[in-house]
Image (cartoon, rainbow, N blue to C red; front, side, top):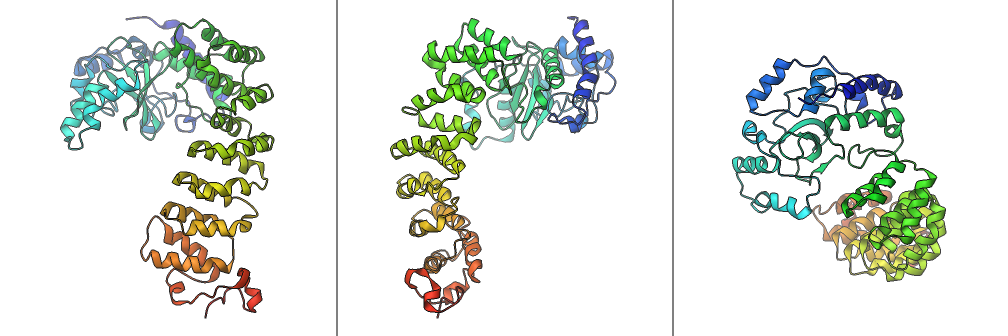
Length: 472
């Protein structure tokens, strides 16, 4: 058995440090496990488990449960650890494979850190392409795909982490999803390295900072260490992992920013977009001229970076978006452009109106939603009326929502037409229609019995009637 005595002692000393650093239990899952572990297991318990399943557990994991601790007070009685902690030894073994766990736990693991999407798809081919697969056959397929992996903790919902117990990557921790998403290996060499990294990031405050913390999904270490690895890396995948690791940081050093800018200007084209994304996140002013240039060919990435990292600067991009927006023909680029426009808090309705007539349904939906965010949305009443008469139920739905707080009698005849067209609920149209009609004291049923008078300019005052009396 490999001896990890020095690392075990470090981990033992770091556990109380982590608890002290996170005294308010702000790290994800800490309010559940509270940094508590029960007494370690015995050697006899471990050997009994190994004999039952016909396996040999990785030494790194055995060292932990034999010397640090086992079980606790968290979800499923888990011990302190990443996310919702580390499962009690010997429990939740069948969380990945429900039947014949003993059989498949012995298998060599067939997944690996650099596996392609295509390889993962090929492993799942029989599951994905066979709707008539029996439960028994489904279990067999899952056993082939996820055999040789021991579940060791929950991340919440359908996500968990496991440890490879057979094969080339024995002892490595892997992030898994029981709903079939492609697994992602953590970057540490073994379970203890992974666990100690978690403690280090709690103690340093990295996991205490605001924002999402998907621990173990990106490379660990300081940004200065990671950028050195990037510069020396031989493979595209390793370089990409380094940049993803830097991007996940909350703050990076000035020297790293300088190297990122140099690599953006002088490096290969393959990483230019993510290098600029990093630069935007950590030094917006440096990134701005490069973003302006990139907007000529990739407006979508520019809008994403501004929205994610410099939303408070959105007004600076109004003129550029106005210049390029007419050329947009895909819904995702348009959607992120609208996010920037909304953040400007400026009247931009004239830029959006043409998109309410686009052939792309998703673009029309986004356009009407965006118009609905304007303070002066009543100025676009005729455009909204076109949305109420659109041939797409989803567009009608979003237009009804967008018309919240717009009280104009010109709308009533169109609301009545919708009530006639949809005698039964479809796509939540009637629910939203009734929200609008309630502002006039009507429902989708009562409006059918009213003959709506079309008023000049939609102004009931001109007819000397109150706003809620616009029918005969």
